[in-house]
Image (cartoon, rainbow, N blue to C red; front, top):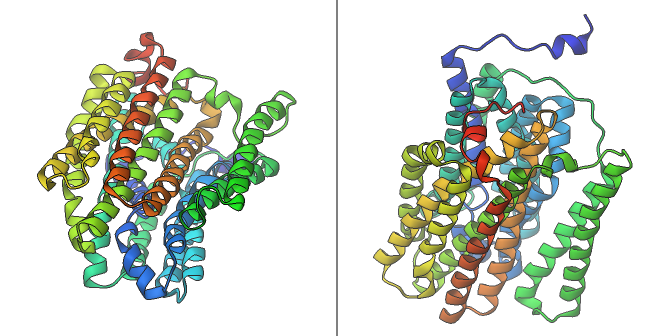
Length: 474
């Protein structure tokens, strides 16, 4: 037997305990890299003061991570196919931990931004693997649905708990402790995955270097333009040129992917992944939802710290209702609701509730209890929408493209997030008044409602039976 054949043999069935521990490791790693996207938000004023950073520099500390995360996810999915999903996960986790140490000791804004970018690279290597590995660990459809729901829930909790953890660490141990905490968590996570998760069969697939270059150039140019607009203004020629160039590069990227695929060339995003309408709906829903979520957190952080004078810890505590409601919704509601009504209804209901939850932001100095109530409604919507996106994509992505399907979903989500931070962060920083906050709340709420039109892409006849009770190998 050849070495490749031996390596690609299906692993023996794992025990229930081993599957649970493996899932725990995969969930922890995902929560860690998702939390990193917004744990830093409440620390930006302190970091700017300590490192003498400009407003744009502060935004780049946030966006450098998410930009690299989003831009490299599709290539990271290909790498996972080549070297194995588990090996890609562990490699990304190791790089993330090393980059976190570099961020901990960074003496300047530039080096901190570089460290954040390296964290994003590690996160991109790690992110595509968990869904692929979960579908291999849990072969019974009902168990797989529960496992995916748990994984999505833990990731969502990791995101919304970020401001609280960040605020607590900043006010007690300093902003550098935010990065140092990643190291022991990454070590424990790596041990669980290495010991309890088996490798998946390898696929010898080439990389699409041209497509990756276009994706990075397009996203980087757009984000640079949005961030720099906070300093140079929206009509600055360099900002307008970068924005136009980035948009053009992304349009060329999408067009070229289809053209190259028709010619039989290897592409970064195989058209087969989004050929199914439910997959496309999940991708559009993920991008829109993360645009709203990341943007909302940036705007509320500004509201709490700049307009209300909250400290980092007070800001984190103010976000606690969001965390608690998201935990409860994900744990007790998400999977049950989707099992009963299907992902189409989950997406529609989730997006509608989240849009309603944004209503208190339309009043800059709304009483905090009203804001807390809005957080709870928003979180319930998130608990319904996120698992629906995941199940729609992973069920209908072709089996040979499972890793790329996961990468595509994460790319859509992170792209929405990085644009949300860059755009809404620049808007609120450029014109920081109550009217701006109200306009942003209305705009992102309308984005959620508009995105619900993507639900028309999911035929009603597959709402329940095919997604919840069908094996994902179809």
